Image (cartoon, rainbow, N blue to C red; front, side, top):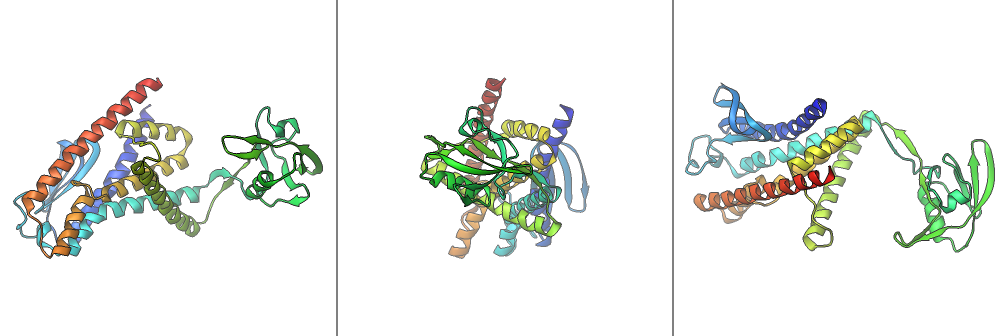
Length: 344
């Protein structure tokens, strides 16, 4: 239980610290004065001041913030403040947090590919599991059997084998099978699965342990990061269109998911942390008031208009957006608690 709590806290810090460091680093590089760098929200537990910046740790470790001069209402004209800097600098500062989340995701996925993991072996048509009472079980297929040919047609991988079964017009299939050093023939009658709408014999692929060199792992880490981003955007589009049910998890739900991943090992935990980091980075870029994306939207309007919008109106919109976000988080957390109680 204690170790799970440590890993949960570690994952949250891995999401929060790089995000806030991105804002902090970019603000400093752009010559902005930073009043505070805080890990956590709410009352301050501990802190110290170095130069012009106060560094602190607050009560609730579910967030953090960087207080940059000039971003509070009525402070827009402060020297070395946020709004006194060029538009490109302000865009960089607001984008830097999400950029760091993406960098963390790439690093974590790269580590997973370097450490290695079990994955489905789709390069060969080797049986990993035979479903009980299936056509394959009736034909005495066993885990470890390698299917070489179907009706005389050579199959070079799992997908090619599955396609041959699906597209076959024969009622009974003749399989050439290799079991250890012995090669023999068996006959199997596929069964149509109405759910998947295809003919199947009731087998699943074997697994294989894969590991990659650092450079290939890095390339695959980048590829996986942007693949996950595409999946998230596709799923979000489906939710908006009503094609898929809306599914969200708040802090309580995320803690439960991390706890389950801890039991499965480092690779699943790193993969989950990378997924959460992508979600945080992407979510913060959405054009929602109070988020980085909402402020970026106002900067885009400023760039098009050639002048900033009224600061009081903008801050009011961000305040309303913040209240709505907090309400949504509380609602999602309430649903997480109900699911947690129901699962016990």
